[in-house]
Length: 348
Image (cartoon, rainbow, N blue to C red):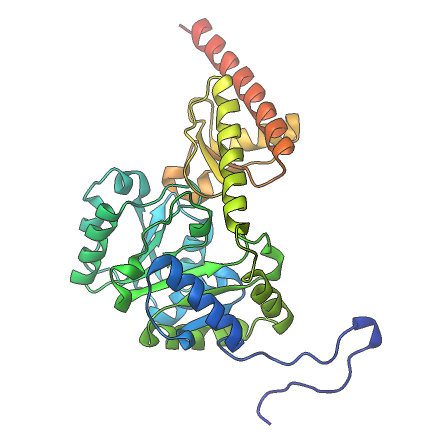
């Protein structure tokens, strides 16, 4: 008799019996299924009750920052990186500090110098927006340094199932200090269901679960049942999805090359990350594309300082739409390049 969860019948038009709050950490059958999925993919070892179901991976991230850090703590974020990272960290009065994703993938020691004094390191492999994945040698160095300096690690693995080969997870190298975030949104095309999770050792999951309950309580049980059904997808489903996305990434990158824009397709995810800095800012280019050829792309600037002069192109749509949209982008950018070149010559 603690929660205010009415049991009277909802209006007939709602078409459902009374819906009560679900278990705080999620319905047990879904938590067990998510645990098996993450264990199989990442090598993480724990018990099923070390999974908390959240309203998407974004809520998992918010609950993790709220539960594992305090006001003023330094949180290291990838740059470029998912824009919500820095927004959440600032909203919770923590201190975001960016590290260069490009330098990290190049094997630079730059990130290691930023670790002392920080509390939380956020890794996102495969990356949103670049689609790149961290190699085991690089990840091993970063994880070892994080352990040396006492940092906790958030490993955002939302795009891991969409990689051509399984990415190495920090949970396989330092399970005692790693919290894995996952979601059914991208892999199973169920973004509107708003089901994600956090998984990790009990001493990390406990405060995350409490923060999640305070921030959003439980995910609706119908959404959780839907997610459970998705996790029982037929054998070969994920292979088909991966092959389709790989084909569309390569298709879009190939079309851009036809127009003279070099954009190597990443080996994971649903995006291409295109450098347009010779033509203008990402914001300007995205506005031009929307206004002139009715193609919507995402400007790179919200992804961090290193996102400036880039656009993110989604290859998640139907193949014909991806091809048509990319041709429109290529033609428009080629025309802009000619104008920029002409202005440069006239001003010489």
